[in-house]
View 1 (spheres, helix red, strand yellow):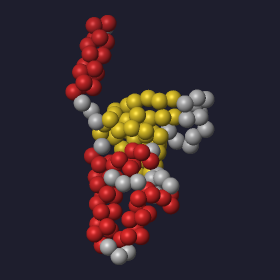
View 2: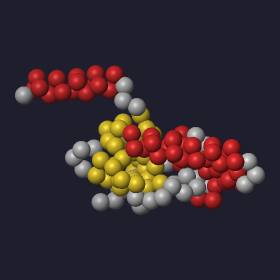
View 3: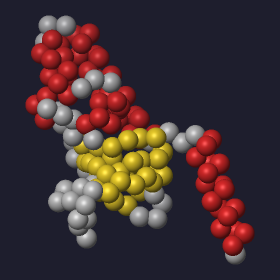
View 4: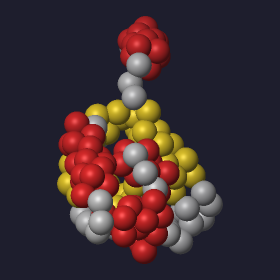
Length: 136
């Protein structure tokens, strides 16, 4: 069911499957599609360029420049590989709150922010559970 307007919501979930390869779009932006799961259902999403840049440690545009420099400087190749491996490991270990944006006519929703779970999130959840239990 397509949305007629832009919506934003947050869920606690993890990435269960990568459904595409990480690409730099010729330096335009990072792209990666995946399947997320909250324990009750799975959903196909894209990771935003901003999220991927944060996980990798450098932009898609920077990666193009670094690839050219890596031809003559092997230490830059190591930095590139480290960034990609670091991103991969973070995605495997990811269990957090994901901000998801759904736009009208988009192919898939997009993860726009990764929020690490903090004590305040747990306290808020506990309070909601306690309020529900008092109603029952």
